Every structure is written in C-alpha cells, then in structure tokens.
Image (cartoon, rainbow, N blue to C red):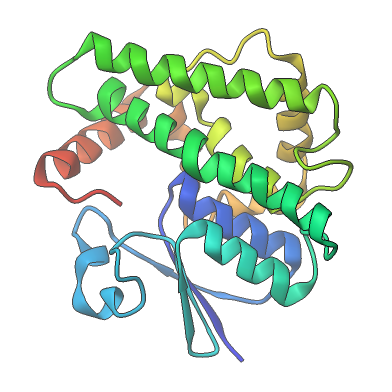
Length: 230
C-alpha cells in the first residue's frame, strides 16, 4: 500500500506533511513545480481537478483539498480527531475556521503585501487587519484551552499553525497575543512539525527579509501575473 503526497513548500502543503509525520504514516513525496505550472498539467488535474497542491493518492485513491486530506488521514488512523460527535465537531469547527478564514485572509495579505505588481494600501490594510482580527480570535480560544479544540492536539492545530507561523511574511502583527504565542511555540517544538515543514523543502529562509525572500517574492509575483496560483 503506497501513499503519495503531491506537494510544494507552502503552508497548505506543509499541513499534510506535518500530519503525516505526526501520524507516523509511510509516504512518498512528489514535489510539484508550481512555477512551471505542473499543477495545471492533465495528469495532475486527474488527481486534483482544482489544479492546486496538496493532494494525495492513497493506494490508488486520490484526495484533494488540504482540509479534506487532513480529515481523511485522521479518520483513517483514528488519530488527531476525537471519535465522539461533539469532540469531532469541535475539531472540524476550528479546521473550517482556518480553511475559510485564516488561510484565505493570509493568502490575500501575501498577494497584496508581497506579490502584486502595484501596492494598493487599502487592500493591504484590509487583509492584514482581518488577519490580525482572526489571530485575536485564536488567542481568545487558546486562553481557555491548551489546543484549539480542547485538551488534545488535532488536525485543526496543524492546519492553523502552518499558516500562523508565517505571520511576518504576510505583514500581520502577532504581538501582544500571549496565548497564541504559547501554542505556536509548543507546536514548533514537536519533532513531527519540525520535520513536516522541510517536506519537500525547508522554506524558512523565505520568511526572513534577504536574498531568499526577495527571490521567492519575485517568483511568486511572476506566477500571480501569469495567473498560476498554487
């Protein structure tokens, strides 16, 4: 039985590699070259009709959309999500919060703050401000619970952390949120998280200003202009 992960070094891609490492599942990695538009090739569209990463093929069964992959893996293994209806619902609520809010708002902040060919201050302020608001919601929840859905680490934490750890790149202010910081540090210390964010490559250097950041921003800017988002 073979599980193949089709991915790239992005927050959505890291969600799945972190989860796979946490679950201890064996998997093969197939890096998708986003800048070359590989994610739009017919063979990949057969796996992921939306033409975006990540996707998996588990013993011939394809699953696309990062949140759907996380749910599939959690249910397959019986880990990282409670089996009881209310516990499961709490995890899914926070997972949907990430999928519908944190990811899209931070993604748009990235586009307008880092990649768009012209600076539009109102758009930058809009998405960075909404990102900060969502961070305060997370901080408020984490003031009451160790992890987002309660006492246990879950796929909701993995999905959210893979985005919030990149706040600096999005230009979102994460200062003054002690509970979010405590939670983020705890996840960053987990060996599976440390390994997962190196699959298929470690992009940490991109999160800091410098040559690597400038190079990546230019590459992403070209993709935005060509209409080839990941």
